[in-house]
Length: 311
Image (tube, rainbow, N blue to C red):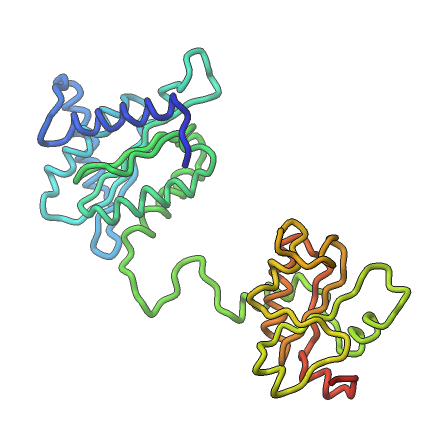
């Protein structure tokens, strides 16, 4: 993430504040501040939700500033010296980032916890939940807290739900046999890829390749590895472009592209041996903007079964 000069100053200010409120260099607060911090810490601990043995919780404060949040973090740490925990504390719309600006508000968010890895994960996840609104992230932190500045945090009911997701995903026990959140099986990936394509039968591909009136250039592309081509044979009129160089060969923006890859509307018909790898490859070409890319249902095996020409 790149920061402006003002963001860099804000980040350095956060680091100074975090250092000042660490147990080794305590900042002097008024009795009122201390009372507020103790009250919030007590409330968060009492109402914590336990996830895989870790206490978690969120608190939004319309009063106070980042110093108070860090003071709360230190008081939570003092109350839970031996217990695993991960909490989020945030101000809501209290500190404009630019004087006189009402619509650009950067709020303090402090993530405090007993485990540094949990805090690091939480900082990264929180940043991803609020894209384009994170002004600064201090992911160096201390043993008890890490901080960020996020615009308009707490202004929507979505924000609290998003932060609960951050906490849950950060502390859940990792099971190497369970799929990570957001991952997809290869069957799902293949299904999603094919949903983008207008797949062709071998006969349709043959007809398009040999139709002089076809409205755009047509290329039949063999992406099988050399060993398969040598063992199974080749198709007359096909281009041989192995899978590992396919995108670079057809991306019109790439300096390494083929001479023929100079337009985005070409009909690029891919085939592999059975029509699985070719579907994934065609979907990848769609990501480059080659929306007419597709593949042959059943691949080379189906072409042979249809009795079409081959070498």
